[in-house]
Length: 289
Image 1: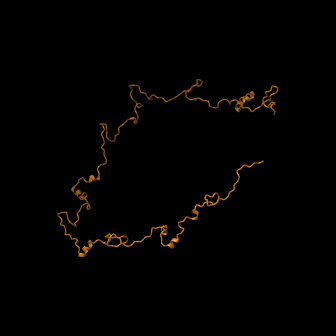
Image 2: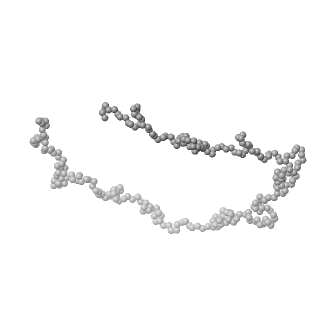
Image 3: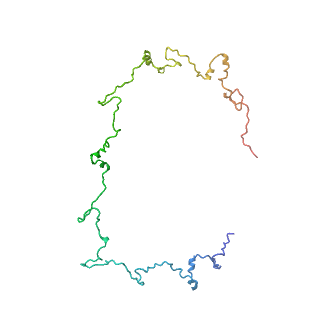
């Protein structure tokens, strides 16, 4: 499209050019079904919607029993039990059998036990004794009964702290029997036994070892031998003879690799060695025609 050409407008939709007619446009409705039911079509269609907009069975009905709040409804008569006395007696009248309280209305005092009314006698009361059998045994009845208790209050045979009849008697009324013991004196006693008892045993001596250096001047110390502490390098330095010395030639001289030899290539630093001729690439610029 060139720059002079105008853009063409679409034939669909609203036409801005007054010379062109806009075609009708149709679309999907945005209303819901509830709105569609409210559209009036005909009177016959409206009859089918009766009761749809009215509330359901949610009426607050008042009870027909008791007092009616609505003036249109009549309240039924009410009946109840009376609160007045059934047989009311006038003041100063003689009491009759109807005005006397019943048998269960009296607050009668019990006839059992101690009587609080002085006109009534309290009956005798009996109870179980609180004394124990131990107390009963101590009651004196007769001398014959007392004989049966002989020895009940006395200690038993094993309660006595009886002293032994063997050995020394601490009671002065009892005679101590003579006693014999074994003699403690030794039966056979010799002189060498006493001397041997004063001599220390074999394991009591602090003897000095015979191995090693002897501290006692009376004893000679034996010679000692040991392994040498010298190294093999020191042994090789010991001079024995000229023939042995020849075997060590070259041991202390430097090896062939330890000599710092100069290279034979290139310029020779030593004046004794001539420097060989050398060639190299030229450094001049090459002219290309």
